[in-house]
Length: 419
Image 1 (cartoon, helix red, strand yellow):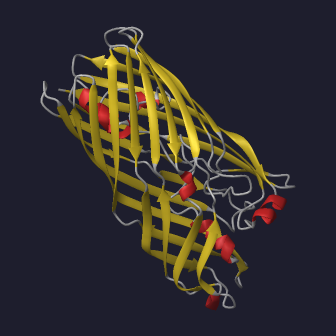
Image 2 (cartoon, one colour; image 1 turned 30 degrees about the vertical axis):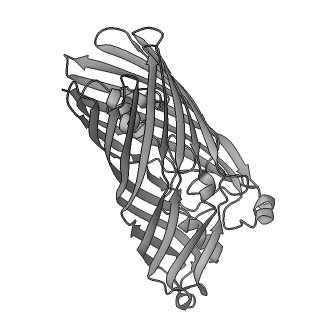
Image 3 (cartoon, one colour; image 1 turned 120 degrees about the vertical axis):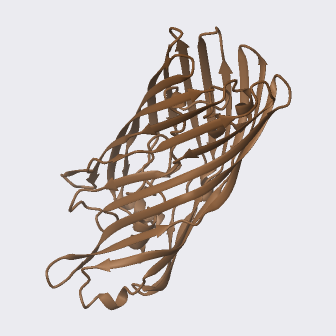
């Protein structure tokens, strides 16, 4: 095993194949928004405004609680460079969820709220014997954010808001094989398991609605450096010959969760039709390298660094909803997401590529206070190839040469209650 291959495993720390955004970012907050291509910065639909634009929450007329859950159904294939066998990722299902609750006086100028959501979460398990098994075999990631929010209407047309983003719970488990066999012919393996430290960030936004037919918004979400300081390292099936070179029991690493600036426009041509357009700018360039510190040498050294060199990226979103009857509203949308990963820097834990997303959704209200929301996203990542020559040229031979292809379906359901 080389240090670089170990770093590749480490690259999976707190990351994973995102369901609906580039890199390891996931945007699945608000079932209504999910059905509209993920727009929401320039709209004040409901309590999920806390995630998209805290400034818009004060303009949400109704107080309420909503609970949503999604299922990410990913299909991924890999073919090694010059290989004839296509490896299929084992199908896995993850269930990111969200909870938004907004409160405040019915005629007052402010709204307060609490949001709980899962911006990072993934489960990948590659097929046995695949060409990259010495880089990664499986990963299981969970993360939960809690966000208290306050929003104030300065005038009837202008509102502002801010919230604290708190990484309340984060866990990761990842595994890979080691290219060294023991006396029984078994390959060694390594497992990294750890929890991230709890940390605070913030988001803030401004919402302006100059008329009944137009609204605009801008929001900013700060970067959080997710840190694991005391993760467990476990080796299995090592031969007596190589075991003395793998003595680490703990590891530490830091992964930037980048800042995001978003602008959005809402257009309401009629009372029944709402259209939204968003642009997200994600400062992925903060992710340059990934460094691991071990409490004992691993194959000769206690520290190692792997190149990432992500680039800042833009996401473009559009979506709309139409109120068919007093109880039924239908939605549709789409998004184009530029990958922050440059050619020759793709890793198995995040085999990212430019992606196109199509969405559908609907809501039905039962009476005045209770409603059900449904959404579905179809995410198609472009086929992406990196060659061994590119890896050699970039100094990134800690990853696998070949072609990745990924598609994801994300159905979602939500319940909402207003008061």
